Image 1 (cartoon, helix red, strand yellow):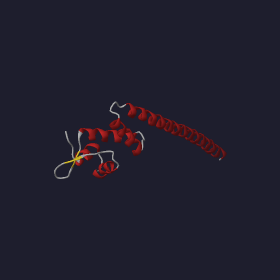
Image 2 (cartoon, helix red, strand yellow):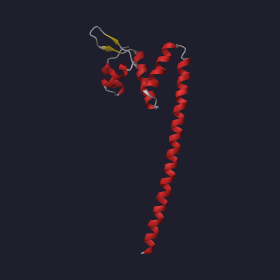
Image 3 (cartoon, helix red, strand yellow):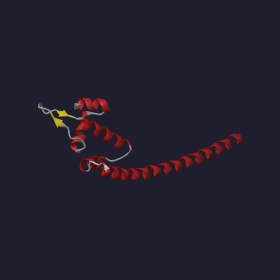
Image 4 (cartoon, one colour):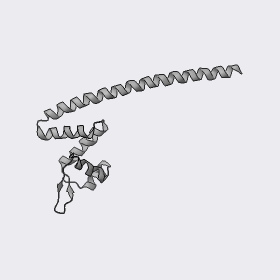
Length: 127
């Protein structure tokens, strides 16, 4: 099955400009029909799904590109899996750090709020 750029844009809720940008970055490589229009195969459809999943998990487009192209060089998928695991471990560490920061911020905000509640109660009882 083949897709036009409009089909993909509608399916993935993207602009055609975004899809062309991914092509410029060599993330997608559609064929061209006789009229020069882009024709996206199931492979390109699957790649676009991978790009969007990678972005959702916080991978950079360069990282996504590397992971996608590793499969093209090693059809066993081993190199791609190894690299994806490496990038995934890095991302997990980053997310864990952000969670710790947010937990600390939450704790600080709760303490500050509790202090303000006490001050307000003291102001109310002084009157």
